[in-house]
Image (cartoon, rainbow, N blue to C red; front, top):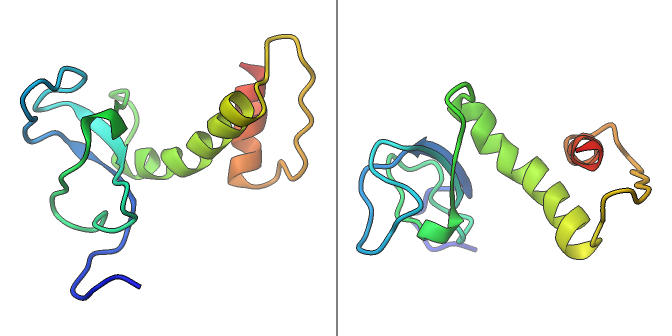
Length: 111
């Protein structure tokens, strides 16, 4: 249980305001998505995050989609690549492909 006061939310999307010394993967003004890490703070106006948790988003992707993208596609990617060690040419069976994570797994599996 978080200590009060707190801001809920763990996945965020927005524009980089500033970066710390040595950060090279993003710059001020970049549109990004990020997992905050603590699971709290995503509904705040601003968030302080680790640079390695930030990913640039394409210009055509809105922030609402980007915020939701991390949970579904991030979970599927981790499952297929890191846990399942899926290789090109292998067969993938997705049980429950009607939900967000399952649909993402089908799309990533085809790629």
